[in-house]
Image 1: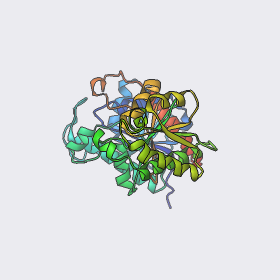
Image 2 (image 1 turned 90 degrees about the horizontal axis):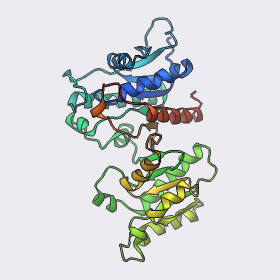
Image 3 (image 1 turned 30 degrees about the vertical axis):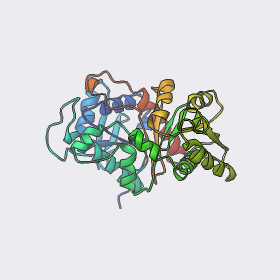
Image 4 (image 1 turned 45 degrees about the vertical axis):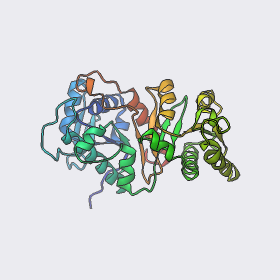
Length: 335
């Protein structure tokens, strides 16, 4: 009976028209032979080979279940994903074929993790317009992964050494984000962040909940959601034993966290959390999906079509996403 290898991490190609294949190959070129051996790529071998040639990296790629002898130290296993639509994929442009490939890479990675073949998924960037052109109507990786795994809810965590945030809502309009602020969602977000930080080694994570309105509503002058919804949710969490404070005005809470007062800030909507984290740690912030039955990290940037396939992209953020994934994998005893 053939024994299938297992891998600590599975790295998805992302949109093949973007910088994903290049930054993956740059990260692989910097890895030790041991780390390469524990890494599985999910995508197209020909595309990865082209990216390796572009950056002049001495890398070879072979199918995940190849029967030939063990590869050399520069060889990397690939779970092959083909261009299902069969139409050309132009570099640096939106196309349905690229969106479909990006989706199928994530779908295959989820299958591999659920089958016990890989531990933590690391995703290269995809393009939402390309996804929609392929009639894959997701708001991004997090929603896609929730759908693929059947998870009832998911949360986006932006993690960096300087500042980390988790979001009550993400890719929705500001109007809808305000409507999504509820005690139930806030409590679930805090609990998801708390559990994750405990898994990462913190005994008692200190969590701050940002207010929604300017100055937390200023006693109702600028809105009543902070006192009517957020404060009771925080008090319920405190009574349950969580080390949480809030609501704290958003114009001060992120600074206080960056100075070490809190381990995590709960942002009420996408830009409230993304702007301060990207301002402080643009190149090293890692996107982590919580609330799913699988573990996933990602770069926190887009497909960068303007520089795709020109040899200009750097892998700083990809290296950070891979390092975080390996930390998670070690906690799962997967390398």
